[in-house]
Picture 1 (cartoon, rainbow, N blue to C red):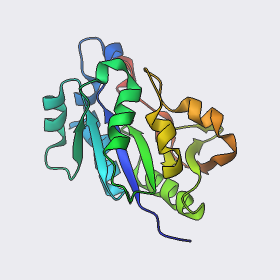
Picture 2: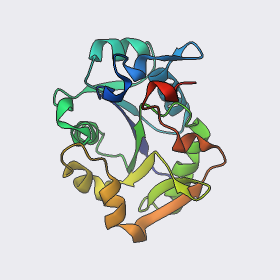
Picture 3: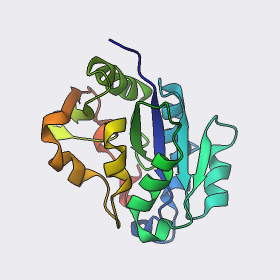
Picture 4: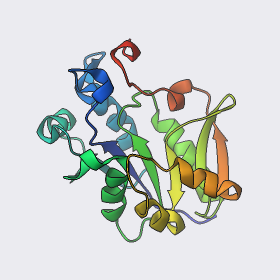
Length: 194
């Protein structure tokens, strides 16, 4: 089993439109901005690099990350949809990266250990599988994509994520069971913040 290089992209460019007047990534959970919680776990994982794609309120989003060892990738076209942030992040990856974890900035309960389990499974597939976390019978996020599918990620358009690619490549999906529900929990509305 060869050692693979897996980077992580944290998507943090959106406008949080369902949160009304609040930018959800900047809301504090236990005294820490939501996005920072997400990125702290990502940085603590085995990911070789962490890129944070910024857009809406970029200055505030960057400030919430402070000194964390990440690379911020600005997406000036963020209003055109999620696919533009995916494109910005994938385009910024190093050429020697074998795979990428596409993490959502609004999922603060995903643990570093969950990410590491995905990376280990990816290694076991020799860097060829699409690795998806499962909790119970439900598929979650983040998804780990192999380099061979980077062109397909770059070809996505509009405000769609990569769900259509999962449907297009079912034979390549490698599910990984995780024991905590954080891979299923994203923050979309004020009521989601507890």
